[in-house]
Length: 317
Image (cartoon, rainbow, N blue to C red; front, side, top):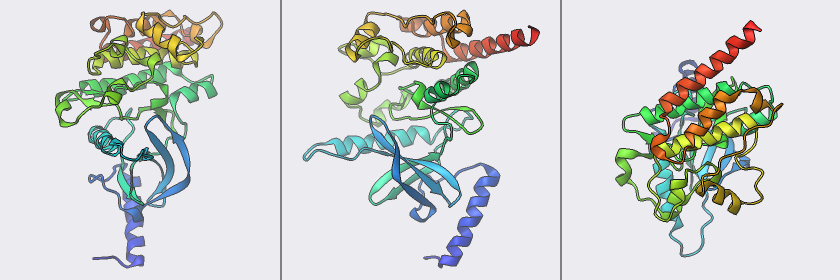
């Protein structure tokens, strides 16, 4: 039965207050068109999707992400995009953790389906540390490590697949939240979806483990996530992408395949002042041998310990 406009407005107001009071989102992922408004201009674009800013229940700012739909005639891209969307929603809606960006739900407007999540005012972690030199970088890394540890400890294990600064968002209160599950998969349920060659090779070379860049790469794993996290330590402590000093993408690819590591920070830089412990941990994370990389539980514990020791040292000076 269709509600009268006044009844609908009254119910939307009640829903808004309910979500604000409980901080919980709908159990059903489907959001009705009248519950959400999409902004006209695109707020961002990634390798596979576009993001718009919207308003949920006339009150909450949200991000609305859709997968790119500009298809070539006769291509089968539409099917692979639908599978990718289904896979991302399937993984994402399982997750509830302080350091994981929550999925509010999905909605379809003008035949385009969007994933809806809370709007993160402070943007992504890479831009955040570049724009805020005094940011507590060990804290952001520790929070992101907790989020990734949660994924790896989840039953069954979830592999993120694309850990790097732009995929960690910063909330209004300054908390790091892992986002963008487009390359994620549930290890014990990999047969539920088909994985194209482009999906297997997708990613950003400077953050990718070398075993993923061979002729017959294995599936992404917790070990490849740890490798990427090590590169993100470099990224967020230096405020630069790994291998930013190399001239082109081909030289970055060669560096990764041959086991080259990012240059250590120069004396006087913010990263240098963070000390050797954090850099040593990064190097352990991006060890060439997958089985030699630490587990995320170890990584998270060590980053928290590093931050604690630095705070203690600063107080006693």
